[in-house]
Image (cartoon, helix red, strand yellow):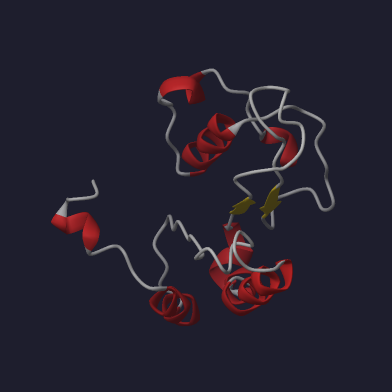
Length: 141
């Protein structure tokens, strides 16, 4: 897919994403990746928070998101619990008008469960690889 010229046309800068949010013309699925400064890897939590407020708050407030949106924010690394389950626990935040407010799970999930949740949200019923047997994340809704 990386070298697919049709798919490359779907890659846009955050400024275009923000314009699409403002105009109410988002696609069914968007994958947003902040740069290393704004994902709190090379920058501070304050940098990341400011980026989220500037770029994600308008999405959450948009009418299309408010009707049936799902936003998953996942941190990809952790500096603790390096010995359990092959790596550290990471934080994932699920934001949706359909999500239980303030819910905190005690279930052990991995990225395959997140993939499964995304695919389920898109109406896909066959899941690739380990997502096929990964625990479902329905408890969040």
